[in-house]
Image 1: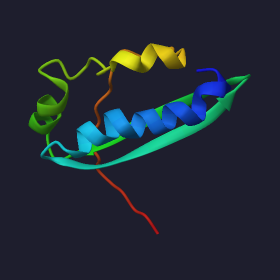
Image 2: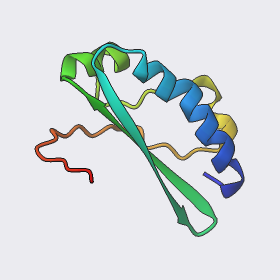
Image 3: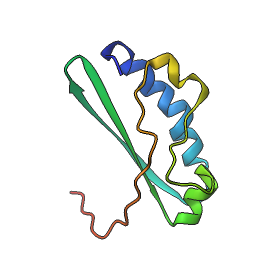
Length: 94
């Protein structure tokens, strides 16, 4: 997305995706990653869940498709429409 939308979209992301996912049973947490790329900002949302059924409750049966929101286009996103799922086999935070 253009840098000009970064701050506003982060607030919007909390009001939509984070709020909705955290209200879903089985949600364990989330992280948002940000990096600058030649005048654009890339944001990546990572969510943590207790199992795939919890993800289906949030996203629907096709958990490989990103869940978008009606006002996403206001922020001139170039969304990755596919979602990758990984099993966490090790984590350590200090």
